[in-house]
Length: 144
Length: 156
Image 1 (cartoon, rainbow over the protein chains, first blue to last red):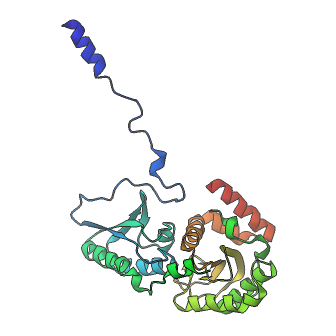
Image 2: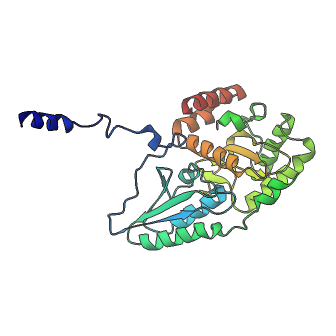
């Protein structure tokens, strides 16, 4: 019996000692934005929605300016999560450091009394391709 | 992508003559032509395209910085440079302040990713107040190149 207990004791030793160690792959090395594991979801005044960027040119300057302008109409704090990093939805400079191309899945999160409306309006803006005439790159790519 | 991957060293301007948006853009495009990065035959067409883009909304993104740009078939890879203004250029910037640093970019029509990565690189550096301060203090083209090299190395 004693031997069995000892065996069990060794069996329950922790496996590996690197749990909780910082994972360098989590942060985007190209970005100075602070790494974040997941959007806040527990707060009742916090809303979030994941959307795909579908306009051909991605989140370039003009589209980032539109996003910032829309976000600033709300009192809520607006954050965007992409590739494990967090960006300020009310700062064009921050949004531009996302370098989010067509196909990028981003999560828009707002926190505050008009957060729900902010998330809806901003998600619709992205889904509406920022109300820009979507320039078809395919035709140019196949041209000689 | 590094700053000096798209900033043409020979076209860097450290003391723009222009005080207005159109003159500033024409001056920088002319510098790119003189540096051999653009065909002189396309100088007017490129300047026009950049000015047309400005009409959709100023690329003066605040903090004294503008990023005038266009897509144009005359280039087959991203071409650009940086220009500094001592007196400031009226650029109808988003914060209504004059601009002192201009990054001008010309992208091939079908490579939106490179354009986004250049914007990412520029805005990431511009969030660093020391970088902006050093850049504005640069007196010569060599000063600018040294600064960009230093920051390119520390970012990699």
